[in-house]
Length: 313
Image (cartoon, rainbow, N blue to C red; front, side, top):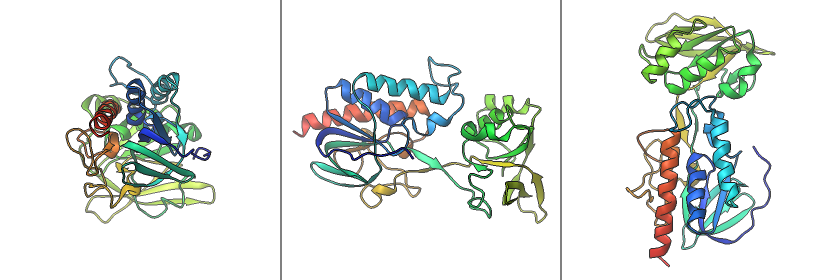
């Protein structure tokens, strides 16, 4: 986690929680509208998008890395005088004004845009937490270079899992792609690319059962066919997990209406169940978790927050 400094207490027009693609875009639109803005981020700006090694579907910027794309977004907001303040939001006391409680202070805001994104889900199997950081990873872009010339396993069947499996072939001697279903959920163009990669071995339908290791780290991933008792041990030095996401909305539990999975519910104008509080991006109960969707929702939420202030002086 990035080093935090005390957040100065003040009243702003729009407080934005999260500096991923949704939060950065919301900040861009909010500042351009002439509003005073506070942009809060508990980690490094860019969010999960910054850990994606390649983004092929962002219009106008083909074959860009996630870190490069997020760096451009952050630079654009900084050019307008808005930088992210490091601080973890622990809750909101609804107003007006709304009081955003941060670990090192409190900010009052006429409106709030929640853009906290989502974090990777765990397998919840033996050995996962024990070997986390010692072979178990949730970011191929971050940790791939540590696995040069050794076999690794990737668990998952969506776009992220297949993209990361392809990326890891740059370093690993072999990549086992383990998925619990026969068919992948990833886009066909990504599947076709992965199937042509000679360093990737597809193993379906198998379910991870146990991650084994020693004092040096991971040594095996134990898997078994769905519904069958026999197991198979994959000799690997790394296990990369990409099985979905959990919204980072714990700080707002009990305050805002949410779906059973924790995703925040909003109206068509992205306002939550509390007037003046909006949500955008992967933390919201939307249909598609993509960078361009998060950015679009960030813009919409900022514009709606601006209009809310105009109509609720």
